[in-house]
Length: 239
Image (tube, rainbow, N blue to C red; front, side, top):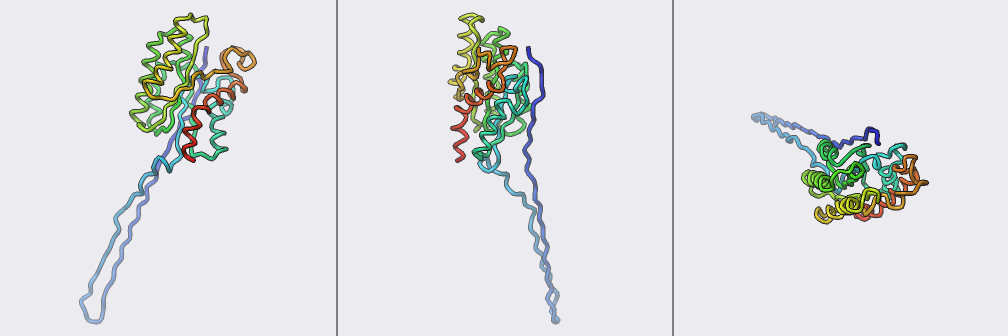
């Protein structure tokens, strides 16, 4: 049901500064010439600390994060960036949403993205697993592995989990087990939880595109509000 789109990659780098100087002096008036030389060893400035550099918020998800059917700047990660900029907070939002992504695909893809530092990690995966009827225990395992990988590379990173729910048509037992994946993960992995990313949007025809699944521009604005309610306290710490 989804199409693949590209996502933005990001890169942070530090520069090297090399300085050296040589000084010499000679004494005259019949005395033996005496030379002195001094040199300063090459020095490299310390890398900027986490508090000094612009921090990265990595939004890692599927078509909901990617903004399927819309322009990139209309997806909720871009809307979050607009709020960040208005508050002049030192954060850069990176949209790593990929349409059609499952939790298994995300588990394979995350290593490439973790080559650069991540300060806040927003995990929005699992919806496609649910719609395909994948066993919730498998979804749990994949999402847990993704969080573990993020923490291994970035021990101080804040992790936010976007909760998801399935429609009643999927069956009462399945929908409960699927919903519990996110509450259980948030508790066991000590992650912050967005109870239901699509709260206020799911099931509303006016806020979804023709497929009834992907939010419209107005729908994405509501998603941004749902995310902002959880992420704002983290970002405001910088003030």
